[in-house]
Image (cartoon, rainbow, N blue to C red):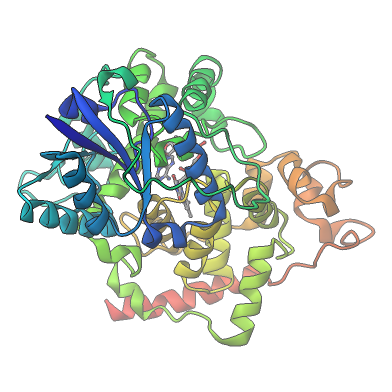
Length: 452
Ligand code: FAD
């Protein structure tokens, strides 16, 4: 009557339907999978290891951590404990889907079952469909159908829902030490996730609609990393929001819906992780060669000479996180001012972001690049100066992350080249002429239109 609970992106004990399916006795398992760890970047690996340490504590030190290919490891452990079922929350990403199919097959060969209960989403990808059964390609109708579909109430679980088996004698490995990460990371515990959520719910959700676009203010929830690793489930957030009847709670719910929409889109089009969702964008000429690589380096280092772009790229290094408005601005700059392929920027983000999530990241990039689902129209090119002045009106965000501009008062920080003494020492001149590059971007877009 023993089973296995195989944790993946659900590193918590509350609101954990797999526990109800696996009770009463189970072995808690996490597999360190080199195929997933290698591309994760130091910030995400370190956050993950800390979250696992905390989960192990919640389970009374009974989390079995092993290393290897899950298709080999999981069936071996299921056999060792004589488990009939291995319980998971379903994964819908391109790699996770393939991995789970391989594990399922290997388990079935030995007469065991992979039991999927729930997913990292309120509504599992693939569930929300149009009347004719087709998936949605546009967000707003998806969001409506998603809300109508609805979701379960949070599951009432904690660590004691299951009697955890002793994990010794199964090849348990110690969790790797933290890697050196320059960025300051949020606390990686389930309690910290819930504390942050309640702080946001009590103090900030009411202002969210107004404050969420202001990178100079702490107006967003910072829940992305906790959702990424499942330290909290979106169901829990949605249930709490339903008790707040403000417009801002509705706005926040819409952001959760974006996360679910992009997971759905990636599930229906796994190729969109690497390729243009709208294939007519394959005709867009992008920069290449040594000059392109140098320009990319400048962007990565936050030395473009456009303060809001540079502040964002430096926030990414300092915190392994960047404000959503600034993610859009720096992404637009890479694609439309530097004419570089969006996937160069997406890869850099995935290396550094602690909340790096394939679905939200690749589709956030494709949205900005114009090649994604209901993407912003390509001809709407973000102006990095006016964006900066609008969303960081006093220049406080720029000054926080770009020390060279620390002494420039007010919104003048967005155009340091106009200061009487010129650009302050150590800060670069703008690397491109935005007006000229905007026209260049539009000319390149004509080739996409011609290819349609
Ligand atoms: P809040 O404003 O508090 O939003 C609440 C939650 O809603 C977020 O935690 C997130 O789960 C979800 N959400 C909000 N906006 C979006 C969105 N546009 N798309 C999908 N989900 C959203 N988000 C990631 O989680 N991982 C990524 O790798 C990622 N890469 C991005 C890349 C680009 C180019 C862009 C434009 C956006 C990206 N986003 C990504 C979406 C968004 O920027 C972050 O979710 C948000 O900044 C996280 O901060 P927060 O939790 O304080 O957000």
